[in-house]
Image (cartoon, rainbow, N blue to C red; front, side, top):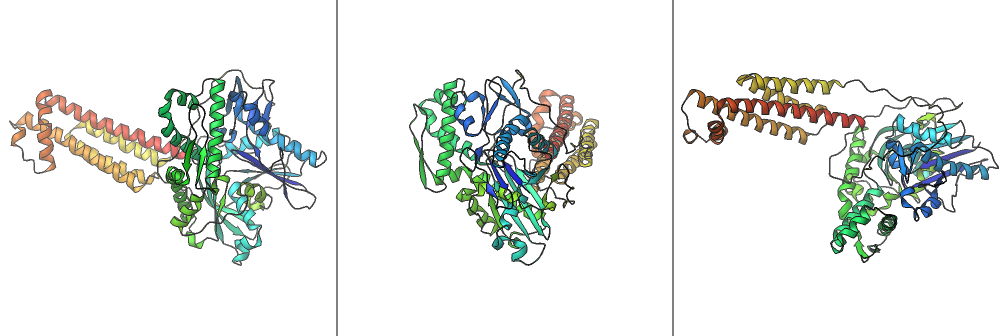
Length: 558
C-alpha cells in the first residue's frame, strides 16, 4: 500500500511518501525537501508554482502570490489582470506534487493521500483543501489530519519520545506548539491505545513568521525612511514593476536576516537604493516580537488548562514549524510554563512525516471507500489573551476578468448553516434596550437604568470577556450615571428653588457635579439639560449594545 502525506504550508509545502513497505521518505521537489507554496499566473492562462513561480515573480511581481494559504478566506486572488480562485491556487501546488509522485510510482496513483490542516480550520476551509486535492488528481481516498495530531504522531514515532510507552499506559498528554509562517496553532493531544486525539486546541491567525518579517520591516523603516521618505513609501506601496521588484527583494532579504538571527547575534540586511544596508541585532528582534510571542505562550497555558491539565503533568511540549526555531520561543515557554520544550531536527517536515503515523481516531475526515473514523473528543473553546500584537490584512481584490477553472467536485464536508441566535447576546440586548428606555421616562427610572447598565457590563463576563473588561465597563457606567444624576439634579434645583453653584457643598461627588454642571443648566435652560441628559444616557446604552453584539459576532466567527 502506498500512502502520501502532504503538508500544504503558508510558505512551503512538504510531501512524504511511504511505498511498498519501504521507510517513509520526503518527496524532493525542484531538488529540495520543501517546495515554496507560491503561485504565479502566467499570461498564457496557466499557474506556475514553486521555485519557478518565485523566479518569474522577478519580471512581473503583480502576478505573484507567495502565500495563498493565508488568503484562504478571500475566495479569489488578484494576480495581474486575472482573478484566480484560491481553490485553483491550492490545486496547482498539489498538482505539482501529484505529478512527481506519479513519476516515481511509474504512473500509479497513491492508494491514500493524507492532507494536513490547521486545527482551527472549520468545514468551509477544509472543503477548499479537499476540493483542491480532487482537482489535482489525488484520487478518491483522501484523509484530512489536524496538524497538531500529525506532529504528535511524529514525535511518538521515536520510542524514547512516545508518552504512552514512556509512562506505561493511556491518558498521557502532550502539547504541540506550532508556529508556522502564517499562523500559530496550539493543541493538547492525548495518547490512547489506538493513537492520539485532540483534547483542546486554539490558535492565532495573526501570528506567524510573516508577522515577524513585517515587524522587522517596520523597525528598519523607522531607522532609514527619513533619508528619502518618498522612495521608502514607494517600496512599501509599489505602483510600478520596478518598485514591486524592490519590495520583493527587500522582503526576501529581511526573511533571510531573520533566519540568520536564530544562529548569530547580529546580521546586516541589504536595502534598495538609495538606502544603505542596516545592522540588526538579535536583541532588537526579540524586543520587537516579545509581545506577540507572549500571546502565544499565554494561549498555550490557557489551552492546557482547558484540557484539565497543568504544564508539569504533560509528557512534553513539542515545537513545530519553521518559526519555532527562533530562540526566544523556547526561552519564553521555559520561563512562563516551567517546562523546557523539545525540538527535534527539521521541524518543517514534522507534520508531513507524522501524518503517516496517525491512527483512525486522529483523522478529521475520510473520503472514498474507507470507513469513517471513530468519534472524537469534544474540544472546549479557549479564550484568547488580549494583547497588542502583529496585524496583517489583505485588501479584497477588484473584479476584472475571471480565471477559468474546471468544475469542482462535490464536497464531502457539510457546510453548517447560520447558527441560531445566541441567548446571552439576546439577553444583553434586552438589558441595554430597557436601560435606554428607562432613561427617557424620568428621574427614578434613570437610577434603574444605571443598575441595568451595570448588569450589562457584568454580562460581558458571560460572553467570554475578561475580568478587566468587566471592571472597566462597570467603572465607565458608574461615572456616566453619576454625571447624569448630577445634571438632572442641577436641572431640578434650578426649576424648583433658587440655588447657585457656589452655595452647594462640594465635599461629595454629587455636590461637585451639581457645582460643575450648574452653568450648563443656567445657560441652556433646565428643559434642555433634562432632554440632553436623557438622550445621552439612551445613546450610551445603544452604543454599549452595538459594541457587545459586535464582540459576540467576532467571537463566533473565531
